[in-house]
Length: 303
Image (cartoon, rainbow, N blue to C red):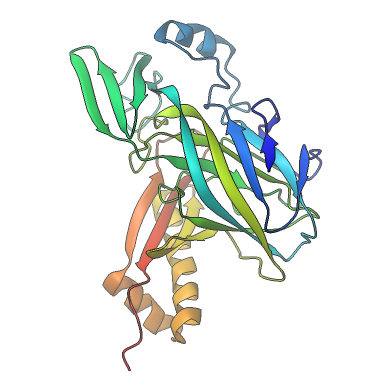
């Protein structure tokens, strides 16, 4: 089985980035991922130095890129997340002037979080708090046809989607814009609240096992995903309204195909049963908001 080591990483999706490995369609890969700090934060005392040297274009490192044999522009990758193994310790951080409460939070802060089996232990000053882990992949994508999409940002070919359902059992469908696709995966969170309101979830090192299939001629306009229970479309935009609109437009198109509906019928079906949720809305300067629309596969044609 192919393994991509933690030091085989990229901070950008770009057609000019040399691949670190080659994978055949249908094969499985294990990617070792850093946390968003590239391992520079191990304890609270590391934060001042990290902030001093922090480069906004070198966060959210992703393992790869991986060249997928036979992938050509116009195809799609179907990447199924088979397993996420978390490291022992993660953290969640606030920076002065960042996040939803950026006008109120005026000091840098960090809380360390331990992994204990399926639980997370949030080391608050007043005493630890315990809750269930919810591992997910924040960054997954392919190279754009031209230009650069940094791993800190979402793009129409993937990258920093920050969509909670990208966990074990999910299949992410990504467009191929360049030969070999140049797939990269990173930015795992042990848990992330919807909206990622501070700009971080529980950032943590991890190992992600994924199977990559190739769908010829099936490139989507932007990433969407399927879980055992749901179909999910994604959107991004400068505002939450823009991101929601893009996610809903994708879902309406999907439902039109799935159930042979008119666009208006699909829109009304989505209004009746779909849930629209926030991916990332942390008010990060220059970074688009993400949103996603969820529709249950339990809806079936009657008769």
